Image (tube, rainbow, N blue to C red; front, top):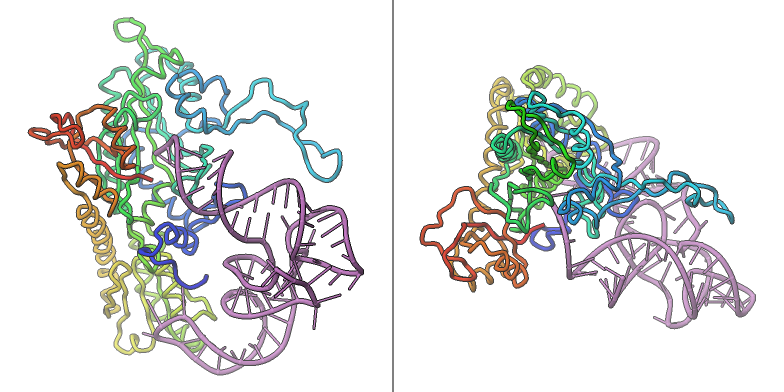
Length: 491
RNA sequence: CGGGGCGUGGCUCAGUCCGGUAGAGCGCUGCGUUCGGGACGCAGAGGUCCCCGGUUCAAAUCCGGGCGCCCCGACCA
């Protein structure tokens, strides 16, 4: 691992790429736009995933798996949905390769063309609703609360590790309900889970709200979202929950008989978060030394680095630490001992800072003499000498402190860069000069939204749940505001 | 798809203008000394200079053609 990363202030995009690759979260795959998630990055993803998965299960959802391949014709059944995804679909047209006539290469066998071409799922609404049609007859079959963890493919032109890759991992929930209210409750319940995981586990403060029609999911009645601010003050959509109404039920003709024996279309929701969240964690918390991971999702919460001049001295340190570290493990703390030989302690300090381990324990002869250990916080860099006996109590407390501190730091940063404005001139200069979020009134007109986007590149990230529209005017038109919204430049 | 740049050891790149033994730093391997903030010495390994063709006694270097990648603009979780 070469030294350091490009300074955040110097080149944010490069800083980000440096951190992701040097912390060994991910690497570029051989096909343009693809990404390898390396073991450290995948461990992080697994912890994020579990935080969501257990909450989905607590609220009655079950995991299932639907196919990667979808008949091309399915995509076209819902008009908005096609328009949204058709232009970025990978299409499978053949099923065989043969040796090239003039050498060693392989070419597509023209005789192997598929009768019906299939697409690689960009999202699974269509296959899932084709199946739900078979499974739903009566109100007794409802609700269906299914989630799947899967990969999807969207053929993007410009990609960035975790933030936008051709293939990515995500979770997509697809539910079917008897009433509009149930579907709406589900959509909101999931959004609340997203908010909770983002804030409590990933330590990322978010704005929750509604997407405008221009920004909503293709095929949804309406879309709720959580929006976060990255370290360069740009917005990142961190999760979306869609109320699909009866759009997909109509497109796939999915009906049920209600208690009054009437045939009705089913109400639907879908919702997702993706590996993009890993990018968000890096951008919200990272600094010029690398990642800073919130303890609740850090693969290694406490990294111990023994210091000594010989194998024997290292052995003594490991003996010294055995009991306290065992106690921590029994307490379900993820403890790692970096006892690699031939690498200096200083190198290890830097490496684990790059990887964002929340706490580091350094132990050498000096500590053993006074029956203590040196503990260093990644978020602040603060070093403290703690008694060996107190560790099993102190470490969990410190991890909590770091968790909260990261959240507070991120929240202060976001709030300092969120401006409540009333003048469009100020709006333009804020967006152009420092970036950041602008909280302001909007007249609800999509033409206004489009013009602002054209002039400033800022989009409405969300219509806030908590609204104060009394006396508020539209930032652009000056007409009475219909909504209070957050504008920002987005990823 | 439009504009710009680049392909040389695992990585970052020099060498190309002006043809003449393929280099540096980092990384890697071995041994020794080190070890509380990215250690040092010695010895080594590692190359289709993107590909194809041409010019030449001789091509990483010149000429022609191709391929690939990166950056900037129009779409996006």
